[in-house]
Image 1 (cartoon, rainbow, N blue to C red):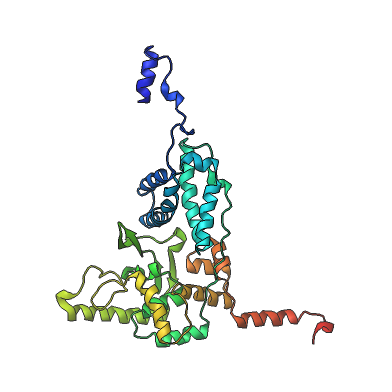
Image 2 (cartoon, one colour):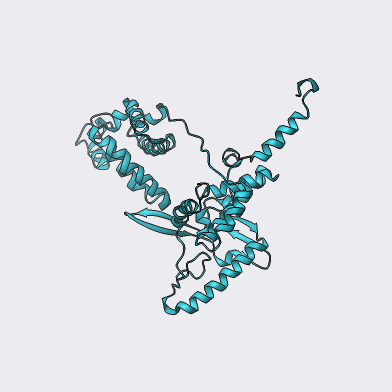
Length: 354
């Protein structure tokens, strides 16, 4: 269209191209914000991981669009009145949503409006002129060494036993546990390689498992020592799987023969099973309630309390940024705090001691 009008001007059919009179940044070409962010979401589907896209979709389709759609704000309205965005954040906070959830919505809105700015639909990004909620520092519950020892005793024989041990001792994420394959175990050199993951995502309304031959980040791809107790457990599981396959015959699922964590019928354990079953197990056995992911925190806490440096813990857990290790996992147990207090007392002047 633009080329045709320019051609007409060049041939003196038109004095001035009318396209120049249309400024996409002005209200004479209004685009509803909800229409734009919906189109932007469709574009992002082919540009990001499916798990990232489903996260965008949940926020935009189920939260952001329903709020803004009745208001009929255009992109230009949003640019001229950043308060409209601020009002949305406050509305969500007043409904009881956490600041971290609203920050997630902010990231979606800002990224969408940044694209609108880049292609000339608006002259600035209004999301840069709002007050983003302050991120809440997460405080997780963890298990002490004694509590983990008790957990290991009562968890024996439970379907979550393997997952619990791998999370508590190795600090593995549930996606890494479910994604473990037999070729990741080097029995000869006593090593475990973390390089394959299985995650769940809601695709077109259906919860789907996605297997990926890579980890969350490059740093998450790591090799850990295979301790004797874990080696014994893995060899036992291998024999059990071989026996189950013989007993079940054709009924045995052969789709996941290369995976370690499967049920007696050969089906791979779902990542959601661990996070859903584990709290119920704790309640049934009258143990302190923690999330499954908190076993990873517990692992980090014990490593720290036993003298491992933050750098070593970062490498063990597979964090890409040491600040993540520092901010989340430096949980000192009480005995460590007592030792620290005693060390300080010893350097106090004599007249300050009781």
